[in-house]
Image 1 (tube, helix red, strand yellow):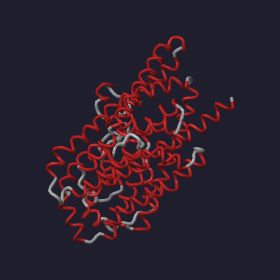
Image 2 (cartoon, one colour):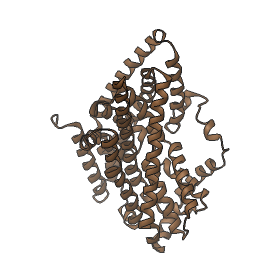
Image 3 (spheres, one colour):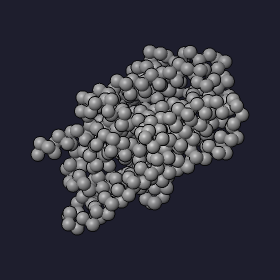
Image 4 (spheres, one colour):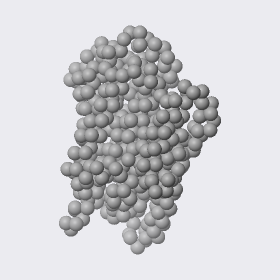
Length: 420
């Protein structure tokens, strides 16, 4: 097995885990899987989360310090956020287009609708409470919550990753303003810490094939629900595939200057981990490793672009929210006009920035959007059963988009530095 490349091992673990996940309920191995296999997946996920937060903080600080000036930092930030905003809007428009053409909400029978609503009503009620809390906040509450009251408390919760990033960026800006001779010891320490964390990522990735297998093996895929909601699931997956097969390859080739095959071959380990964990934050160590070692992108660009993207760049989530909103509208017999669709684009863009990089966060933001558009939240009970599978798929798109942004920023920054 030593001669098999790590990406191939991870892919084998993925395929074996998916096969086990489908077959183990049928052969009576559910207790064995829960007792002896599922904990290995949890352990792997915990290892990724353990590395993610310190890697975000250290890489951002080191990246900003390496940038050297606030003018260059603002240029990098503007280019990065500009791509993230554009790619998010493109993803939403694709989602609206696919859902408008296929009209998945018109194909669910009344019997299936009643059965699914009854099955997932309790789960829906729990999420409605969270959505109501978000809805009744003051207009500037989101801005207030960008700055953590206590950094240590924010660091303990992956859902508050954006707060950690804001605090880290502020500290990095302050570090960039300190004269180089005074800040040299701290910069050397950050470089050493980053090397240690990257070695830790390498160690964690050695067990990735086993971890990916365990995560997939313990997942019960509801194929009956998938078939009942086949057109809805298909609409989301078609939209995600359009991003992966058409939009991103064009961006990588034309703007990033990389061969598409090279890019996707190098990114495969991160995509498999993203699918297995459903978390951009948990996948971040792998994505950074791939971009640094596999694609040879600049350290300062990787350290700045990817941690930011893991929190504010959610193309897959945005596309899914657009499809799901139109699905519920069609299910309810409501036709959204141009004004409502424009509002949908704005809300989905804002929601993608505010969504936590953890599994299931998108469904809560979606409930807020439905309420603002006057659509019944009860319609979400129909899609909760397949949300896990779609969550895994859209996380792959989120992570891929982050890597595309990294390649684009690297090319523009590299060309600018060479021209000087």
